[in-house]
Length: 137
Image 1 (cartoon, rainbow, N blue to C red):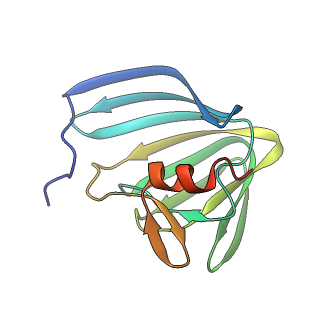
Image 2 (cartoon, rainbow, N blue to C red):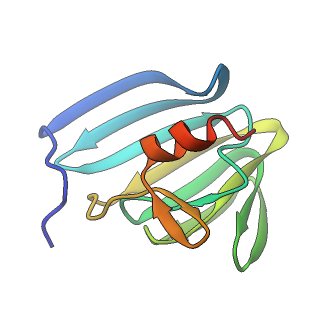
């Protein structure tokens, strides 16, 4: 299957600060090679809630420090380091980070689909979602 988005052969993204509104919730370091990536995440607080989101590719995540709870339509899954998670791109969830934060290392397959947020069982693309709902935390 051809990925929906073509990448440069090699990219390094260092210390990207991710925000929801004015709230810094994550710092990310990424090595991208031919569409596959390794990402280190330093989680400070929860990601977007209460709507679930999915991803553009399958991934494996290793929780190396801290704790979090993945909230899904099928229930909540609490993890404390060290822990391992495999997730398909279509997996719907939102992440609640433990009180001291968390560190993860993730290994991502090549993207093959567009991702977004699930509102009333309909997929909303990220820009549309944030325009409508803003920062939900």
